[in-house]
Image (tube, chains in turn green, purple):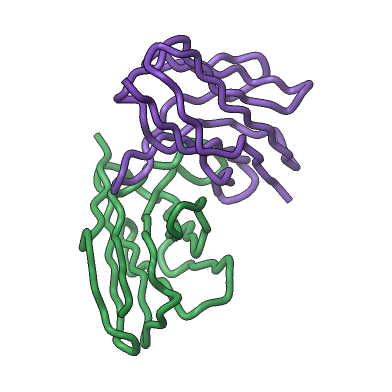
Length: 114
Length: 113
């Protein structure tokens, strides 16, 4: 069966510090991968998605970047965090390509920038 | 572009009450439709789905029917429990769009004993 791991679960970082959140998927090949952010009490905002190794699409301009160094690894990074980067970050995967299936989510990372 | 509009919350019900959360969508292609549930501090979990018109998705007493004519996918449950308290998201996915899902803003449900 497929599983998705996302870490860390919680993170408190000072403004201006770097960020690295990691996500890995097991039990499937060539998944579509996604990073979402959820602000408190609000819906999900798609930040990045990837349909293959090294292929990253950004949905919104921001202070963050993403990379996919391996087929089932997706990393969210920042060189210098801003207060506005605080939120709940969710990694997800879906079957791809060419199918409209459900997304499978990790447990999320609660990021607080102080 | 694609969009999902769902009933604004929060919704507060007594245990054993009937639940309806409305969801309507617009899509450029022929979408699959989903309901996800999120418990506090966790990621989203798929609750149910429907992939074509008139399909009914069901799980754990929840149901939703894919209505193409009204572009709707309303979530219903006949008798809610305290354990159903969570945030519910309606979503769609179109296979021509890199499998990306479009989510509604979520509806917070609180069930009181």
